[in-house]
Image (cartoon, rainbow, N blue to C red; front, side, top):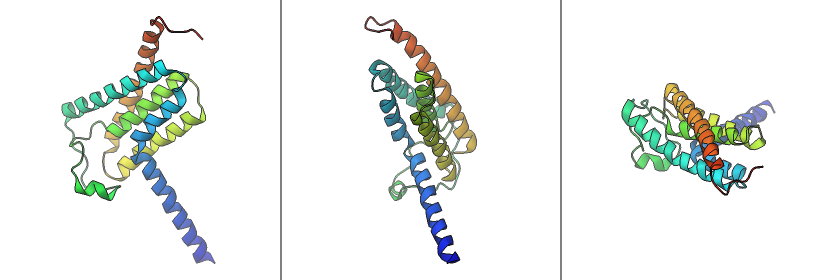
Length: 175
């Protein structure tokens, strides 16, 4: 009985870890969907989010070219298909997944300025992104934390500037 229980606990634990890895690996997709769910009634602000998202990607590419910090050795592949291609980016500072996840999280939080279940889930996705990228040797902890800080600050800035610009538009309605 004890062996069966231990086996069951081990299998459930593996599935939970696999879910955490998947949530982290697909964080870029998830963190595009979550702001849509949160902001679908505020299309101008959602438009600002997507402009910022594209600018965030551009910023990440430029920072990687500037710092040229190598990724860690011994990468572990999450999907078998990854082994057939070359890694998307040679450099690892800052982590793009971390930067984009925390950009989206920061943007969502500062858009509504309160914690909702969607915000809490976004925090979980962002943290899973960091954990997965670190556990699979895609990035060092420094690269991940720098990405998280840059993404958070950028998200905050885009919300603040975006809200101010939206106030200037003739169709803006005060609530």
